[in-house]
Image 1: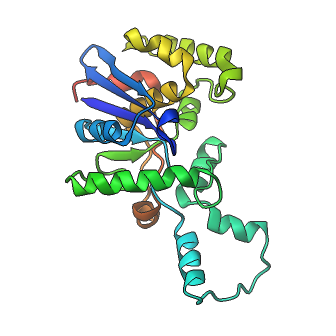
Image 2: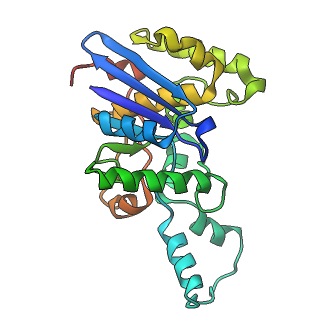
Length: 252
């Protein structure tokens, strides 16, 4: 199995992509690119059995309906008080709410934070993948699955805060140490220094690991009640088993 992980940003400079090859004896980081352009991202998503993308795959359904109604001049005036709670119903997707309930981490709002710039790029990439014949299912049932590296790290008992940015280079190196200790079967090889020097690289690797969890049924999936929302809004796959279990039946 080949899994890919994409730490997506609005611009190439902060975008990273990792390829992990799985075998009966473990996993090898085959390729890692920091500063990845669209062609490299499409190559990874097309070649992989499963590709994890760290970016919202869609917008909240209530937000979309709100914007469309406003655009058309058909927005009905809210009958309740317009405050923080009302805005939250527009700002977060169902998967954001569920992820917060499970992990205590609240993702950035694709409707109200700058992550929306990245999501625009992601939407264009998904459209190109679909045009090329790749099965694109925002709920995670196709080649692509939405991931949240910090939440994955927390699920696996690894440091998940304070490792981003140049000022936290020591914490990033400690995180790499923890990842290597928890997954001795994962061979970073010549790319280990890149991981120690770039949080984007580490997030791409974690995204590829999470893609493996999703591919072998060791990650959350939307419930039947949430499936309709997941197919339009996207769904974050959270690991449900320890990191060590990713090597079980590694050829599968």
